[in-house]
Image 1 (spheres, rainbow, N blue to C red):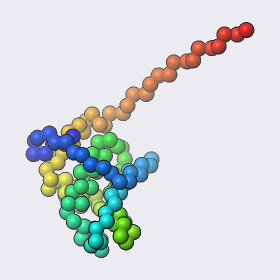
Image 2: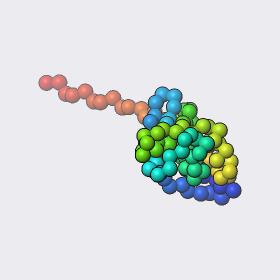
Image 3: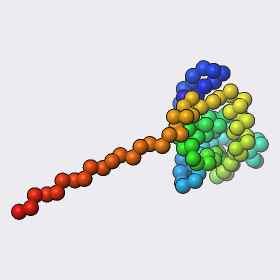
Image 4: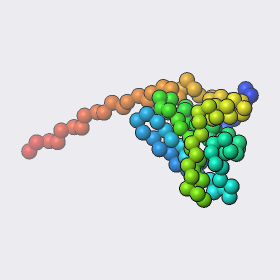
Length: 122
């Protein structure tokens, strides 16, 4: 859920590959375009906006991790990382803001485990 120009918006999408480790989350989206960009400056804006939206959503899910994004162009097996600055600029251009920022930062409570009863002794 996002705010766009003060109105609540839902986003629907499917991340092709998500890699989560101790400190970072990497979002990779596969593209099969005929024209493969030479670098991030030539990536179509619609793909940058897509990745910026995914990044914004995952920042709410993983508030303590660095979120990185890249596009994998399958025709040439070319991975193009997108900078945080480029993604942040797309979020500003789209006028997006996270809806549940404070709630997402809360850590889940750990469940107390009740001890298992001891089996009867014969």
